[in-house]
Length: 362
Image (cartoon, rainbow, N blue to C red; front, side, top):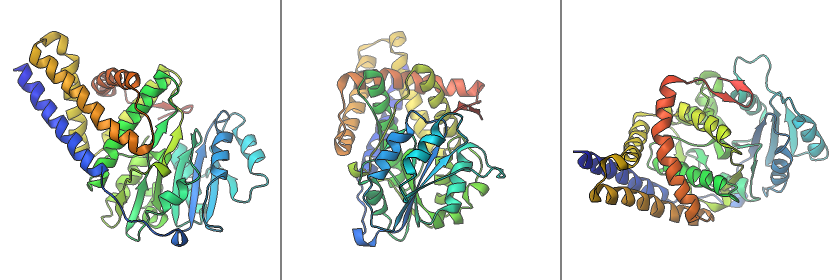
């Protein structure tokens, strides 16, 4: 009986991998460089003195048609030297401006920072990234080129700096999660996205009510994705395009990684039914692998190995398409990590949903 349950769980899991791969392979029409819409880049920064200058330097190198781009940096009431570093960098750069979140708003945290910036923005398209990220010069123009008239959201991939095995493991995990998000979105079933490489049409944001009307969530990116999706008016796409890949920093230690995973997991409670099914399939498949020592048999071992091999061959073409390298040792550590957290995290969230992030508690 355990082997039958394991087989059913893996069949469901493999089916999702196949569907996600189909979604990932979808191609989307693009508009010409001379027809790119006006765009506003928003970066919400809180206590980012170690990262903000590198981020600003990358934004300053963006290629975009003259007069169509602005960059708004929101100093989200930083308690370190972030604000001063922003001021020093942008003082002779008219493309940039620094603002603060609306103190009178009923919104809280990063949501308030983004909502304030959107209100002040002039661009038809809003692009979001984070202060611990760097973008390639082609980032904005590549993302904007996918905005056909009926497109409301264009998401992009993020990979992590992976110079060490610990950061490399996190990068493999993030690519796996984003590939899953991209595949489902491109099959017209949005279940997830990431806010450090996300863009949306400002008009779609307004029609969805903006963050003022959307329910609060610690994963504000997904709530916005969901709000615009529910309009049933705009296409939401997730092209796998290496020219729009953002590089972010990994968590420095296990404690920070635990906090990040808990925040993302908490946001998963807002996912639609299909998203819950996908997470449930991953939970069950990885639980079966974790229980292998208790129910050891040749068939069980083959099933566990087959699951790991399937993950590897799912991830290879994604990494290649994004211009990233999948290192075997990072992948193997990811498999251990993936198996453990997909089983343990749901149990933790059943008993503790309080989230601590950037010095704030939600």
